Amino acid sequence: MFYDIPMAEKQFTVLDLIDIDLKEHNSLNLHCIGGRKGLSREIASPDLNHPGLAISGFYNIFAHQRIQLFGRGEVAYLNKLEAEGNQDTIRQMFTYIIPCCIFTYNLTPTRTFFEAAEAAECPVLQTDLETADFSSRLMRILSNVFAPRQSVHGVLVEVYGLGILILGDSGVGKSETALELIERGHRLVADDVVEILCVNGNTLIGAGANKIIGHHMEIRGLGIINITHLFGVRAIRDQKRIQLVVKLEEWDSSKMYDRLGMEEKFAEFLGVSIPKLEIPVKPGRNIPIIIETAAMNERLKKMGYNSAREFNQNILKWIESDATRSVYFGQDDII
Figure (cartoon, rainbow, N blue to C red):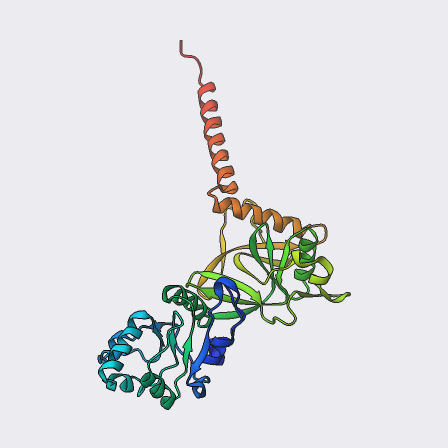
């Protein structure tokens, strides 16, 4: 998922983590129970750390730059240390700069832990989620925060369930093409500036770079239009995985365009390659229908069927069979 959250380049703080507005199965249910003076601390790593070894006294490889996650096991050990009066390891932990400590299952730390955290101005957060569930949700969020991003000038639409990024020079007709696709029942994700996020190292997610002016389009001669108000919520979506790139360009009679579809081209964003089509634009060409066809053809390719290759194989079979017949029927009868 692509969340509306601050980018890591702009410094992602503990307060930003608490303030993320996520719903239902993505919600973290976080609230601060101590160390409020440290809410402006930066979270600089997307990884989590369970400090079981640390609170037992082993600090040789303590990953203090990560968020420290306390579950039932860690809290049980904290209570044991409190009962034994052995709190040196706890105080030692807060000699390191820690972004924050998070307690799952609505667990609460010991009094000594609270005092040490307050003295070090380290935020102590609490959630009612179980440790495994909370960890998976938080890892998804942090992977988005720290994922590489780039912005491109283009239009992102969803056509037959396929995310298509339309690129091209200014004035070539990207927005007009997208408007016709919306009229035909497809959905707009972003116009003009598309922010691309690389998730898991191999998946590109696109969304509007500006949430305030999102789902608006600029049509030359008409001005700014609101797609949501004109076509309804069915015509928009907030984000979409980019699966095909279509580059529109003015028709160049001197250029040889691919007519069979055998030549595969790719566009690369953030180190990920995406199938790319170059579509020439000239009067009389119905670009929206061509893009619809390209979307259906790409879906067929993902299902294992390639029309161009099948056509090529059929042609080769026909040539071979025709040549064989010519050789056979061209021979004179010997008998």
